[in-house]
Length: 301
Image (cartoon, rainbow, N blue to C red; front, side, top):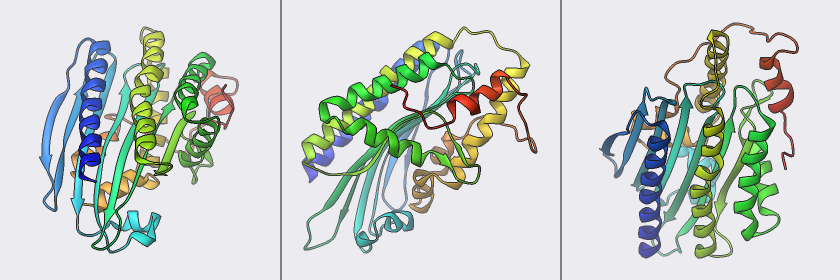
């Protein structure tokens, strides 16, 4: 699969470049700093991080391509039949933490995985998606987000958006809180049918579609006035993001277990966050509306 691997790698590097260029352009102040790193056991990556921008407090866009002779435990737990195979994993993952609490945090990821052993056909699949985590919800934004997701899925089948929307709702769920992380989006994994070309085209549509989904929301909300109340609520809600990534996220666990670069893996963490014991929102407040109206599974279309 060497040709296909190079095709995917070329796309992922190009995608990272495109996303960084457009995020820096809309921010208008900060630029991405780049770290190229190598992994002792094989592979490496290119991490880009923007900090203290006009719009984005921190935005990280990471490309990695790692490989090894033994599958990490998190991967074999997901696919036990692949134990004993060598592997390659590559992808682009990003997390954006805005300054303004009215601009949502967002995450996107597209990835490609290959598991091989002598005398057997390689096992490969694509995965990825994008999701939105608002602090103050807007129906207009949620509908736009999901309409964009549905539109990019439509050429690949009528059932694709509802299936991957449901998977996203189920994945980005804080089981220990009985709470959704955000308003969802798309999540898919183990995609290898009907053929490589179809799966690769869909993965490209998801990766490029993220900007169409996110940037219009940033434009609408970036100039909203906010004060200390909104900022403190944003920092509190960021704690849920930390909890999910450290307790439940498979990508974080895979990165750590595969010996990836810790700074790059944990670039998803917000730069500032606060925890408050038994915090309760005021009834009928904008903060309460987030949980009551947006952090529930809904059909946004």
